[in-house]
Image 1 (cartoon, rainbow, N blue to C red):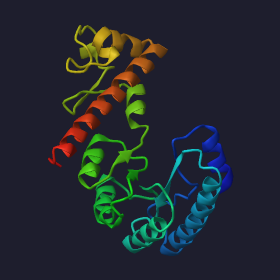
Image 2 (cartoon, rainbow, N blue to C red; image 1 turned 180 degrees about the horizontal axis):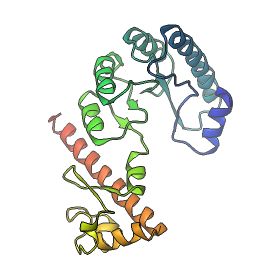
Image 3 (spheres, rainbow, N blue to C red; image 1 turned 60 degrees about the horizontal axis):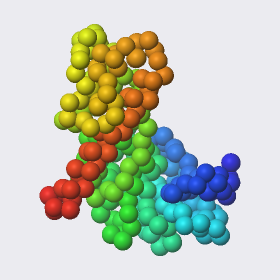
Length: 233
């Protein structure tokens, strides 16, 4: 895999947003190793960008802000990337050992990103982090968390809580997953049926649970957009 082949692969898949090839060092890496990784990743990003610009196809490419927990490297990354013709910036690389590290970093570096550029947070998708990220000025997110949680039996509710569908209390419940949800799973199937599908196990469970969790996330983001438009956050 090279920066060039990575871009070509994403283009062949029809990606709307292309992310350059980068390196993800662990959060506890040494300063020297982090500096070497930082330089390598930025060389790769420039090669990726040049490959993209040769054949844009109406697709977007975001530069990825790196630097680990080193705020000075993060600021340098933002300066370098924002001077290049990227369509936006994504906060990536090592973000720390826990959500507190992630949010502290986001709050420190998001204000450094030029307002003209949309900002994406790579690989973070739990609701608390997304809510805090939006408050810090982030625009978009990506994560396997909603679908992975669904596959493992965690179903989200519109009030911000969740249920574990495998628990016995749901075995005979005629209630929908969430009475406030308007997804196709909640409109047609009970918690008892979802419990049965999970325990069986049936592949249909994974489909319905994924539909539900993604719908809940879409509704949450829709509410956030309304709050933003109304200047409430």
